[in-house]
Length: 356
Image (cartoon, rainbow, N blue to C red; front, side, top):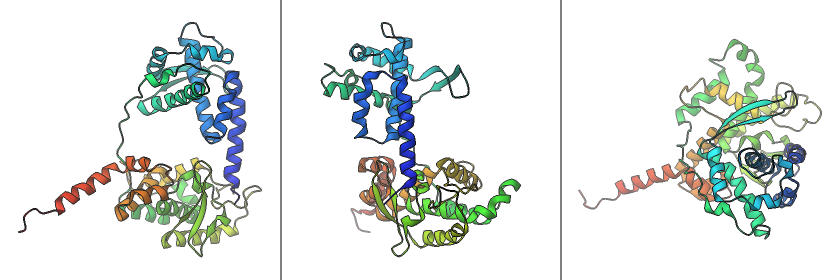
């Protein structure tokens, strides 16, 4: 089945990556060709950005390296050792970059990285060195000698049952919105209700949600097909509340004439274009801020809410991993470890050694 949104996003990322790579060393071509078969264009672009930070560090902060990033060769990579990498890891905590944008020159940006950010940037360098080491172009892999920062797991932020009910109620009523927001609420409330109900009722990612076309929905089986991370198509199923919200919205959607190129999109913006990820993030923030001032609710937190509810109802971590589209169940287990621990505590309380 065709996924027009994801195809266009992939093309956009590929073109952006090609342009970005012009500022990187030529010898990296083999590495990026290898990545073509391994990760998505979005991930390749992310790697490219992180790798450019690394070569920028070598060019500006380390001695005996070229000062022009594009002039680096594989011989320069051979001279990188564990000491250099440890200094780079320390550098990543805070650094200043000067670069040009399409509209401005000499833009200065300060960057702070905590443990997760440092770990992610080091991950790109690990992959880079591993590739050239396995290709026998490096005699050693110095990234094996450095440690990743210790990641402190954050507790899952999610909505409780009463907060979910309040969120859906405020989407329906618009109560508490500003005058300006209320002005548009009558035009968007059915769309917003369908969108938020779909996220809460399926746990799909926001990028998966905005990519849905109307023909992807099968009401006979209460199912729809989405494009998961990595380009995998998957059927997911929804309940009666999601069905009802979608059916109500589709009455309005079928009456709306979308702009060319957006005719099939399920969720449209006020401009009659396919709604974007950023717009969904904004509308979730708009409504959720009316029901809680403590929790910062994002589409991903709605996904966590679904995952929590499903795990509590089934106690099946493999089912949760499958429905959420996690390729590795350990990813799911890591996020829901606190809930598993709570279940184990319940088990301890159930077992009685002496009968009353």
